[in-house]
Length: 404
Image 1 (cartoon, rainbow, N blue to C red):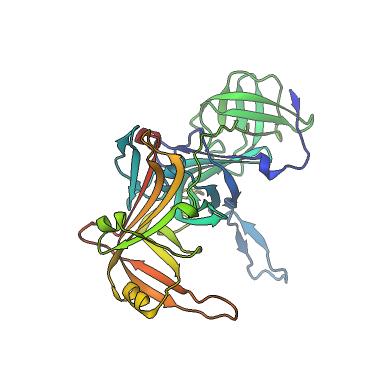
Image 2 (cartoon, one colour):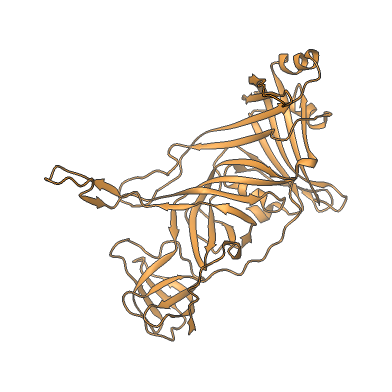
């Protein structure tokens, strides 16, 4: 038994881990650790306020339990080895190609993404979200390095459960307020049992979860726990295997009449602040709240879109005219990392191919003492020759099996 540290917690001592699920909403013990800068993924309890006409002035007479949802945003370092997992949450991964010599290319297009388990350690209490998929990915450059903002939704969550009893090899969880309180746990998890009266805890390994969703079997329990004691996951031990991030200094915007030509075209220099936003929309961002369950049943996809914003200086009207008056063009954005993808020195890369686009907006704002730039918003469209609007590819040193 050990005493529980009840002092204030430093966020920098936490961690974030993700793990590919075998099927949507089937949690796993995540084992891919990603550098996290900030997050606000939360449990939205969605209680129903009730204020009937009952002869009182108070704004709220009662609250009733609502259907929960789980949403938020994480900001993650954009580096070659872990980035494919993030795009795998948003898009359909195709067949990876390549060799250790040339590196491996992982393609992503519009289609049903895979789901992940996401675990964030918050002050020594891990919050595990399962059935996690992304709704949007947007890059941001902090100085030179790229950070990805990933907007997420999930099907369920586990953090802390109240114990009814625990002794010998059996733990029974309280399900009076939440059915199936063990949802999110898996065999092999290490659980932390906390004795409230003594202020001590012990760690035990979970071997089985009964079909009732509340009875757990573990190898052995040293202490005796009673109603009102608590259980949560033991924090994971983080281990990182990372390359250098994609960066602005190695980012290239290439334009041509078609995507194949754009890939090798001479880059066009644009200003910092130029960026893109990739979306794969959900019918309901909270998930499908179907009957018979307090949690979302599914994350139902609708349309996908990509918006590109360019900040560009044009030296004269002729250059501006050439750029803007050619209505239909293709664009390839190439974000490189200094890390080698292959033994031949191939650079790791995040590549965004826009098969065809039109200029939607072109504003030229003026402000005293500032340089005049065009702010151009591009609207990608479906291209019949490429059979797509856009494609994402990541080139790195890991084979496709790492993301499947």
